[in-house]
Length: 196
Ligand code: NAP
Image (cartoon, rainbow, N blue to C red):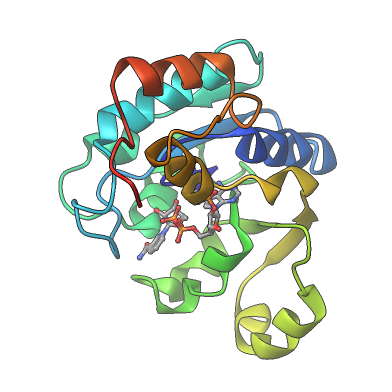
């Protein structure tokens, strides 16, 4: 489950649960991006904060874990490096799925060493309510031809990290958009105080 998770919210958690059940997965490993390859460090909260929020949000789920792999790897985060590492750890026979947002998935052909993706994993793209999947499929026929992509509809993805950051900056409530523990963490560490 790859994402910046700035911050993690119920949309991500519901998407992970949906993927776990629909694809009969053994577990979901949340993988907060270290240094997002396409964002500057000014755009994102410190990796350690994003990692810790993911840990506290998922702590009670028996099949969810959080990995430090991307935040501990120096330099910009490339998904292909993560997938190669997971393939080495879990072996050739493991079925690997990379779950992320549908918008991110369409850019994949432009990511580093994208030609390796087909052999490394199946992608699970989570769509938000109102997402026009038919139009997206037509627009991105090249990606569909070259990558293994499955889609899941996640109504809870009406919640977004951008909206949560905006709300905090505007002193509006975020309770019930993300777990209580994450709400408390954001408050304690004064994250997202600047208005967006
Ligand atoms: P993003 O551009 O911040 O997010 C794109 C959209 O997808 C947003 O609407 C976002 O909503 C949603 N989203 C992101 N992660 C999600 C998840 N796990 N489940 C459901 N929705 C999700 O994308 P990003 O978070 O930076 O990147 C997504 C993944 O792609 C990360 O693992 C990143 O490392 C990888 N990536 C790799 C490369 C590369 O290898 N060159 C380049 C770019 C991205 P929220 O804001 O609400 O999460």
